[in-house]
Length: 390
Ligand code: FAD
Ligand code: DHB
Image (cartoon, rainbow, N blue to C red; front, side, top):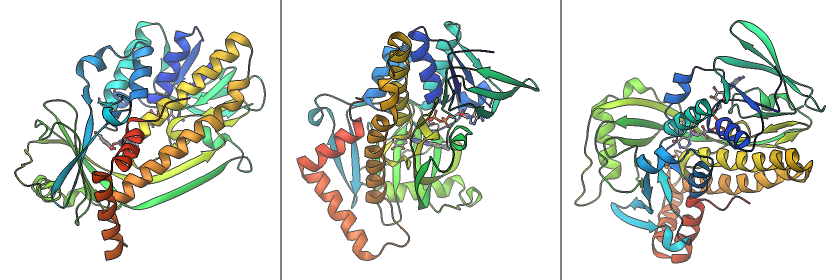
């Protein structure tokens, strides 16, 4: 099989890239290892930056998001048992975020591809990328029990942290930076209306907690736990009791309900450089990971492919490679900003098991600063809603 752009991975990065290219008349094929049901139901992120909302609307995938998504104009930072609201639009020239699950973004993009005659091969595992340093790279993949070849002009590795794309780049070319955190998140979905109108990020001496949501009927909540936490040690009553303690605020109660999903996610920061090797491009989690506290993972993936699509379209329409040449540097500048913001939010709000009493007081001093200084709140707000994709 031959196509212009071979895309590995049907996560948000691969699916959005495919749609942006198809909209510009550029033929592409998406290869996805897992089943459609699996990628459509994998519980992950839930907050879309203004940029992500804008690009989903522009590519025709915004209709259901605009009906079902929840626009949020701020978040609450909760510490010392008190809440402090950070308003976004007043500090960011009117920008805000949308609470809309990654599962729904993925469903919308797959439906759009299906409607427009796009090609996504599910249960098609990419095994190797060959000829990345030539003008005609190819992907070897296994589909329906056979080894097949996808020849293309470009390969986009949107295959997540454990994918094969990044590993294709020779070790002498690729540099990586990494940090693992000494904690993880226990995330639950519960059939109970959210107990708040906006997300609550809580700092507590027992550890971080986050109250998010998926819809007016479904709550999403997270607890900081140990990286090797055993889920069996967390029956429903213990989860709710711990959430009650960490989210406590005078005059406020957390509604409990049936827990329908639970999982533990480790936390790490990771960046690979460069994002290009010849005609192979890395985008999304294949290139970088952030701890989830700033809600940046999915949004960075969307920003990467917005830049990559523009670069490929310029090459296709004008035979101009300038944007392709600039892709790695342009994307990485934004990536490192988000890496820092995610690190900042993570270290501000979590209880590090190695932290001393002084470190704990520094966290509270910084939280107090963000809650009381307009400059500090503005910095958090502009990073949270997302800096423009340039
Ligand atoms: P992915 O969504 O990982 O998609 C990559 C795709 O490539 C997958 O579908 C995979 O099956 C496919 N693939 C891999 N290898 C191959 C191969 N060889 N051949 C074919 N296909 C392949 N972010 C937040 O902001 N908030 C959160 O709460 C949050 N929770 C998360 C929980 C988990 C368990 C994980 C893993 C991530 C979470 N994230 C969260 C991060 C966010 O979901 C990711 O940043 C986002 O999914 C990145 O999108 P992507 O398309 O780059 O990668
Ligand atoms: C969600 C995840 C995040 O990482 C975050 O910072 C806010 C919300 C969520 O899954 O809803």
